[in-house]
Image 1 (tube, rainbow, N blue to C red):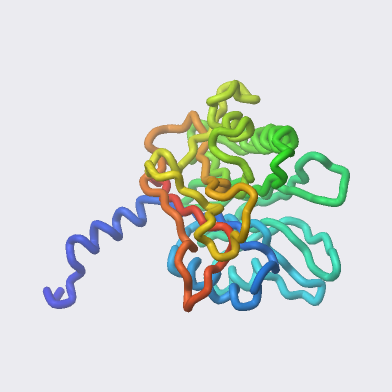
Image 2: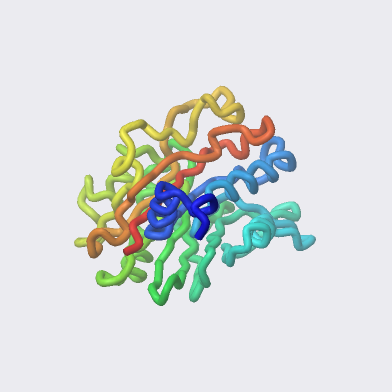
Length: 282
């Protein structure tokens, strides 16, 4: 190979590192709120730049006319996708989606408690096949009100039951990602991380952010122009977790950072920032 076109050693090392990881992103896309039409190109550009292997999205929308935000993003990124069921309200739906560069072998949607009432919260599961190895993924979005910690704790317990069903102690750990509407010291997050007695003995979730970062990692931030006069700003609400125990170093976070925190052509894409994590593959 001509030395003038040979990739640099640094580039080759970066490429090797990239393909020795699974890149996961979680992002709440803020449904059709705010300047939603002008936000769509910023969402797509940000996701293209992240170049994730697996994308977990919350607050996606579709129209009864057939337009589906998740399907459109997946098509433009050349990815497979699954989504939660559509429940129509004034011609639109609200839900979660998982996108993947790799084939999705199985998926299912699980209605989280409470099962009655007007609001529906879901956990979406998928088994993704990469190089004959399955990556189990759960994407969720918990209730948002400040006074609903008890509801979120019930939802966390339901999500952990799904993680327990999906996990293979000899395989790739379960990736749990989404908008948990809870700060790291909350009772609901402590149930996940083992800082409180875990609902399922022998199962806890590693939080990817503190394993790689010392900053607070706010995803709900008063510096975001859409977070106007918030009652409680400066919170980390969005998470990527990896199940434990797992065969080390499989699934260990090697890098975690925010995305969507910079404008694209003058437009911030969502009221939440995205969380990106590279997980050790082999």
